[in-house]
Length: 287
Ligand SMILES: [Zn+2]
Image (cartoon, rainbow, N blue to C red; front, side, top):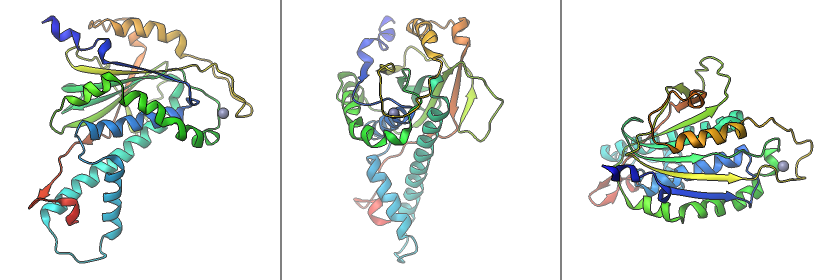
């Protein structure tokens, strides 16, 4: 039995220290969205890399009504699947970006969960969020951060833990995103937000959990943006406690630190799917 508890050890950890770029909320959410794009493709949940997915859907949308090809119902049905997955992914990524924009100081970690539901997870990818660089004007950093972002991604996807994790496979299932926030003043149910307050989430220790620890020195001095706003850092004092709590795989949810943590689940999730071939031809070629 003890073997089961070895799944969440250091071999599933990816430590990435971000130095090449200023880790603003927008940059951090962009990195997370990139991780999601890689995961969906590399775990064979979507049979096309993100850029291809985007281009086939866009091509079909602009071509619609342009010519009167004879309709192949199987191909059309596949288009509905692909196009729904694309729209959900776009929506989910925008929601993650908004969450970081609004609550970046309070986000402790983000979970990407594969499974038919969050409680029947097959695999979990956890991204631990460090204290971010606040008060910067995002537009001053978008270009330079985009340029260096691939270095962060390279550190993640070429790490041993990542490569090993990509080798195991499971059939297409759903992908959910959960965000854990601390010290959030919960202002009722803002139903227009994609991320909704949910119950405390405790991970089953038997489920494979690959953890990406992003670290960043937010105290480094920059003279890039005028009048940097200094925020009181709520996370530091919480972080030491949280790490202690999450390192022990117990079900002890009565811990008072954990009680301060709130979990938010995205209403939007991604439904994985397989490529569809019709007489040996990809359905996307028949759209
Ligand atoms: Zn700046």
